[in-house]
Each structure stands twice: as C-alpha cells, then as structure tokens.
Length: 469
Image (cartoon, rainbow, N blue to C red):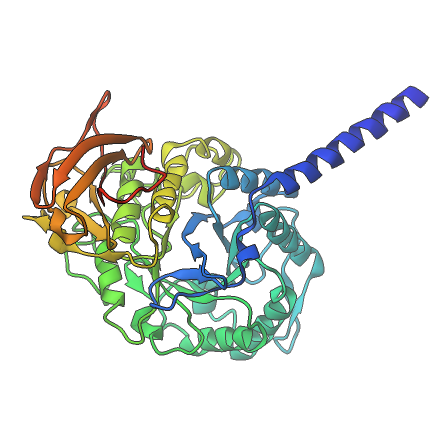
C-alpha cells in the first residue's frame, strides 16, 4: 500500500512539474506586449508597445457546447502548435444554450429577466483560461444572430447580458468581443447596439468587432458606431456565380470568391478602420453549403482566400474547417455533409498551412505594408488574378494558378533585387536569383509535385532579412 501511495505521489509530482515547465517554456504571451489597439495608420492591430499583432484565427464556434474540459485543453494546445493566436467561439448559440455537460446558460423568469447559471459560465471560464495558457485570444461571439432574429433577446436583456459578460471578463487578458453572429446589422439593430455599448461602457480593455452575414461587411451598418474598433466581413462559402436572396452585396455579381474586393469595399467607408475576413470558405465544406453537386472546398482554396485577403490589406485572417467548427464526432448529427471527426481534421493540410502566411507577414516591416496592384503587368481575373503587396524595400505577389508573371521591380528601393519563390503549401523558399530593377517576367517554381500556388518575394538586394535563406 505504501509503495502504491509513493508511486501516486510521484506521478502527481511529475504531472505538476511537467505542466509548470510547459507553461514556463512557452513563448512570451502576446498580451505581455500590452493590450491590443488599432495601429496609428488605422489599418492594422498592434500591442501597446508597438509589437504588431497578426490575427491568425481558428473557427471554433461550438467549443462550449461540444467539448469537455480535457478536449478543450487538447484542442487549444494543437491550435498553439499550429501558431493560431485566436479562436472564435459562440458563447451562446441559443437561448438558453447548453454545454457538453448539459448545463444551461440561463433561465428566464416570468418577467423575462435572465438569471445566469453559474456552472455553464464556469465551463466558459475554463475555455478562456486554457486559451490564455496557450497564448490564444478568445473571440467571444456573445450570442448567435439567429437567436436575436427570433426575438429571444430584447434590448433590456441585451443590456443585462452585456453587463454580465463585461464584468465577468473585463480583466481577462485574452478577450476580443464579437457582436453579431452571421447576421445583417439591420436585423434588430437596437439589440446589437445595446449589447455592444453596454459591454464597452464597462470594459475599456478589449477590442470589439461585428460578425456579419455571408457576403456582407460590418461597415455596411456600423461604420459610424462608436463601439466598433475594426471591421469584419464574411466572404462566405459560395463560388463564382452562386447568389442567394436579396442581400445588398457590396461586390458585383460573379465575383463571390474575390474576397479581396470586400477589403476594398470596407476602406471606402470613413473613418478608416482595420478589416478582416473572419469567415471565409471552410476546408472540406460543400461549395454553397447545401448540396454536394458543386464539390468541396479544399486546402488550396483556404490558402487562396487567406493570401488574397491579407495581400489586399486585411489585418489577419480566420481559417475554418467543416469538422472543427462544429466539433463533429460520430453519434452527433452532422451539418453540411460532414463525415470526418474533428480530431482527425486537426491533421488536415489547410489547418496546418496558415502559419506560413503569418510567419511571412511578421518577418517583414509590418506597418508599412500596402496593397499595390500596379506592380503587376496584365493581371488576370478570378483564379488567374495575381495580388500584390509591398513595403519600401520588399514586394510580395501571390499566384494561385502558377501562371507566368510580369512584375515591375522598380516599385521598391534598390538597383538590384533578390527574388525567392515561397511554396504556400509547405512554406519552403527557393532562390530564383538576382535581378535588375526593371519590369521582369517570372515563371513560378516547379516542385516535385508540380507547380503549386505560392508567393514571389522580391527584396532590395542591399537589405538582409534573416528569414530569407
């Protein structure tokens, strides 16, 4: 018996030491650079000490409803290893909402007053805490749009709920507020405004945005709102030519996949604010969602959406996977023809390729980056469109179809330019040579597997960026 007790004590000591070592051995947490704020040029996010924050989000809508505490810890650890720094979560997907333990978020009395149920919120606290341990922000989608559309939260309830959320989480380091939830801003706007202004009146520490309906932007309704710090758009899951309903889309017909156009449309509003695509196509979800006749979105598609959006000027990007966003496992009713379990999806290529974009963006002078399509001679349309961004001494061009590119290297400093090709699927760099500062033509690098989508990187030859081989 004594030997068993000693063995148990030793095991507990190992677990405690290992957990402590993992916490101490992690990289510096992002908020150690100070709170998040909008950059001085109003296009990006940064910390108070000037460190850039490139939002790399993961779509975890149903985490509170589907994952137990051990699974939460596992999922967030994998996100950390894949270099995500944000997870977007539906705090309540219904009224009331039920978590994996069957605990409901609230009760409603005869007068319509919400009484919050502590066990549900303790599970939400656990999610926030585990994300904090991993250096990850939680994008708190306070309530999903359909519940508000159905009249399940009125203005008075929104104010009380906003006060509850703000007081509970205002001192947590890793919160970003997301108002809305796949809904147009003109649906119950008084409720959304009451929720947002209440939270902001109490919580002075955290940024806030609005998650709109597919193929719309928050700027269409909230460009003048005092509570919105940066804009979001949902480029959605439809392919070229797929339209639905009578929504006032901000981009033309037959350009549905051109998510870079949403960035341009948001920047036409004043005041200027950062923008992000916080719900693009998901890996392994049907094109158009509701039938499989049109095929599925794959890793190359989620890469294309990410690079198009960021090179157009977005302050980051959110990735999504059909299985992960709903945390599907056998025995649950699958949505959108999902067959893969979420734990298996964590190994899929798109999920693990987003980090290459983040690394690239943070390896170059960050705040001077601007979109500049004048770099490209004779650009294409739809999948053949190249998209370019540059700083003072570097330029980047994303090429999805691996077509020949004619580029004006005079747009950046230097008489000579050193040029690389980065494979977007692997993050591998191939040196293409040194070129004169003039208009040059490039053929994308051929890998063993054939021509892949990727980024041409040209840098003033007199500059030395350590990340370049």
